[in-house]
Image (tube, rainbow, N blue to C red; front, top):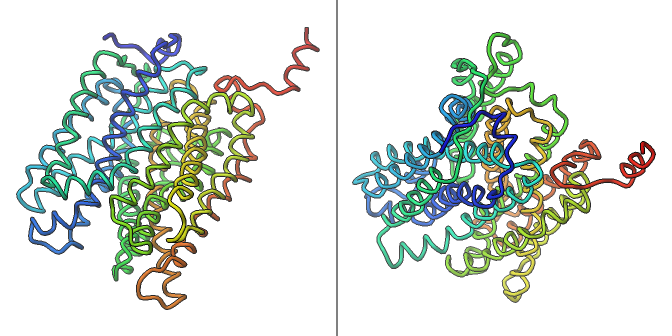
Length: 487
């Protein structure tokens, strides 16, 4: 395959955008499935390594640490070496890391392999999205982003039941081996179907900003993950979060004063209205998206007495809703536009997830399945719109920087959603003086996280009325009147 500059790639219409989206989505699916399957298997792995189950959390946090530090560098690497080269290398690194995880004889070796996996994941996800942004024509971007997101939403839902089945009927090492065929296929298809686009502008690497942002993101994500465990490590979590905020503040001061090179997380992008609103509103909405896969299985297993397989099959409803949305996103956005869709669907998706607070053990499963299917449809539509309109006014030469910025905060807010859900659940237990979480405690936690995501709707009022019109094909009546008057 040939190499293209960003400008050349933008001039080519890609009829195979679905193929491109699905190839990239396979990498995202592999990463999302791996993380959720692993969580189910940690107790079994702890027995194998002869360590306390609580110590196995390092297998999760080591991956997050590597992810947080390296994501901001993804855009620079893609511009320097080519998006296809970095993306395919990331898949290979992630797959090799998976094999090493499966072969790990002890916990320290597993942690080292997880760090390698995280290095692959940090490049794989943001650069994959960058490939999509650069290789798909703007008018096809809504449909492409829809195809891209569906496997990503299915991964976390399939994780718990798949993990339970593997641990029950196979060896835990197959949790990592299942990544090998997915990675090999993704690597092969990448080299055949994806162009090696790169920017014509060469920017020096921002090493100082990389250190500041890496320390900040690593401490924040580590702190959020520690707090989400709900153990007695509150002081450690607060110290990490405090260090992350301090390092983040130092980075902001440094970035605002930087004149010689472009900072690794370019804060000037926040001056672009569509990008700024999508960042802020999307971050608020991701509180619910991060908390829901954490709270819902726990409520079903702890309060309702379901098995991991039962709750996993029930929560699969959200994936079903997401798949239905695949065909509906483009017509909805064409009819109502990005601004109206994000405002009103944002309210609807929050209220639907708030309805999960009313779930009770005696409810028929088909009713819960239906509610969750609508939740999946609505929330998937919301993030398809956010992830598309954010790049509406981004110049082609700044796509890599915008993508790194957006993906970094996307990961941060999803982790913060877990922390918020865990904290709300803990506070509800303390207020009601419950030793173990009850269904009412879970209900309170659902209401807290959905109340936060409701704040995104008024923020979306900041979108221009014609935001993303080229992408969605939406035209207001006033636009038609203006065109008729001009002719």
